[in-house]
Amino acid sequence: MIDLKNVSKEYPRRGHALRDVSLHVAKSEFVFLTGHSGSGKSTTMRLIHMADRPTAGEVRVAAYSSERISDREVWKVRRRVGFVFQDFRLLPGRTATENVAFALEVTGTKRSEILPRSQKLLGQVGLSAKSGALVHELSGGEQQRVAIARALANDPYVLLADEPTGNLDDRATRGIMDLFWDINARGMAVVMATHDMGLIGRYGHARVIELDDGRLVYDSAAATPAGD
Amino acid sequence: MYAIREALAAFRRAPLLTGLSAAMVGLALLVVGLFGLAAHNLDLALASIEERVEVVAYLRDDVRQNEIDLALQEISALEQVRSVRYISKRDALERARADLPDFGALFSDLAVNPLPQSLEIELRPGARDPAVVDRVAEAAMAYPFVEDARYGREWVDRLFTLRRVGAGATAVLGGAFALVAALIIATALRIAIFARRDEIYVMRLVGARNGFIRRPFLVEGAMAGLLGGLIAWGLTYATYRSVYVSLFEIVWIPDPWVAAGIGGGVLFGILSSALAVRRHLREI
Image (cartoon, rainbow over the protein chains, first blue to last red):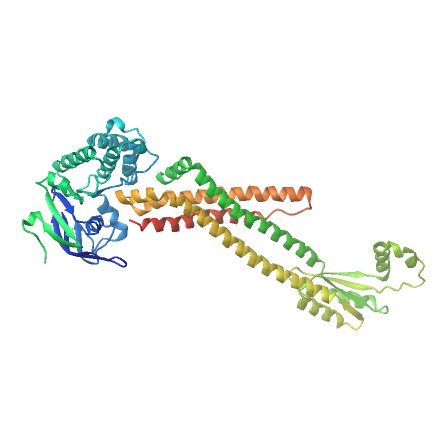
């Protein structure tokens, strides 16, 4: 469902962020993407989200290829790829419901469906009771749940999470991880970038892909360390 | 529909910011409006002075009436000429008495009327520049019974220099003011949109189409332009009234200018918003 074929990414100032990375993520897989800061995790996520295009190689998400899709059509990929961040990126001054409803509204959902669907999504992430709270009134874990509900708004194939627990304490982290596993159990692929090896250790059955200096150096699905 | 609703919601959510950008647009356009008011009145004043440009052909005393009639007919037929009036010696004397009352006694004691009879040649609007006036004067001088033809050459030259300078200054200053207004409007709307870059970011993130993202901002730009235009119109009109009442009589700007000013504000509001949004659309 997600395919990276010999993908390299070079930024004009930073230089190589990814070098010849190939990987495949299947439907309903749970993948940890790990590595040090600057190893290329975020770049990989951005490429899958098509916020950036590879310098060489091809990124495919379902039927969409980085080689063929135009900037005007990128929205089609975005609706199929949910994205959550370490810093949540919610709209301040709006309630939890309004934040989720915003994602539905701007992607053309019928007005009559927006409110019930927003509330259902908040129910899925266990936040029904606080749906009317302004986002700054919520804890970090709760804000991340709102962000996840928003990411799920358009029924994506895959959920990308870039260090989603980086700002959370242990308890909130566990809550968010449980939520990801629930979502994954319903058939959605989850790709989570994290440098927290302790966290990865807790979920030994998940696939782990490690990047180092832009190269794919380990893939648990390949069983043996990858590399040169 | 969504675009209009969202643009109105933006006004509601951040009334100070949107109000300030509309006010900035308004003040920027006010400068243009005041300049327009001044330029229009200056133009009218110069045009009314120009109205007075005429050629006076002084006739010899021994000219015959049929010669005068012929000259009247021929000069009237010239395309640059609007009308020709014959002023007899008696008319000239009466006019002198009326115009120069201090010399009344001098004029009444005269045994012989020293003032010449003349033809006053009024020119068509647009045919009052020095070259045309010169040509008409020459045509009049061609008659043997015309002693002299005068039109205050230096005065006409100066008037036209003034008009040329006026037109040049209007174009340059007007252009500069319009440019400054444009920059201020663009900056004001850019700030307003910058304040909402998070929304644009989230919209792109969740897969809103670019057109969908752009539309509310374009409507907002148009609304800020319209509101600013109306503010500028109101303030310019208030200035006009207070000058009219307390200083001197001036004329209000022609309606098409007002419409162009407000329309320009709206159009530029849309354009500025489009450019500012485009920048943010590229971010993710």
